[in-house]
Image (cartoon, rainbow, N blue to C red; front, side, top):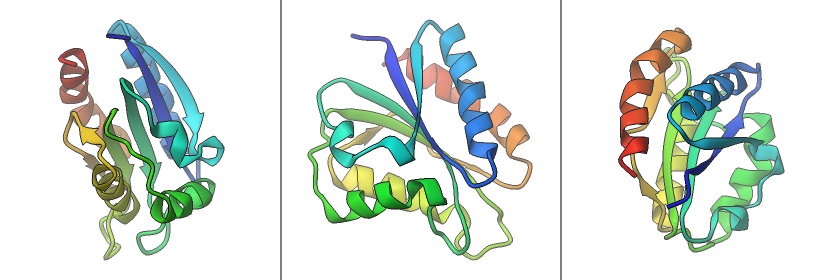
Length: 149
C-alpha cells in the first residue's frame, strides 16, 4: 500500500492551515508522504479512485457553514455523486462551541463523504477555541489509526 496521504484544508483565519501544516510534519515523522491542498483547489472527482487516503482539516464559519475557500467544493460535493468507495479519510474540525452548529461544516463534510462511499479510519476531532490543545489530544490516536492502514 502506498504511504501517500493528502491533507485537505479550508480556513478563514489560517488556523486550519496551521493545523494542517502541523499534521503534515507529524505524518512525515510517521513515515508517510503528505501533500497539503487547499479545498479551494479541489473538485469532488479528485477524491475518487482506489487507495486514496486523506485528512480533512477545516473550520466552521458562521452558523455551520464552510469557510469561504471550501464553499465551491462543498456545493459541488453536495450536488454531485462521485463514487468514493476507494477513499479512506479522517476529519479534524475547528469551531467555537458557543455556536449552535458547533463544527457544523466538518460534521456535514464527514456525513457527505460517508454517504458517497468514503470510509473513516479515525474518529472525527472537534476542536473548540483552544484548537492547538484539542489537536494535540487528537493527534496520537489519529497517527495510530494511520499507521494501522
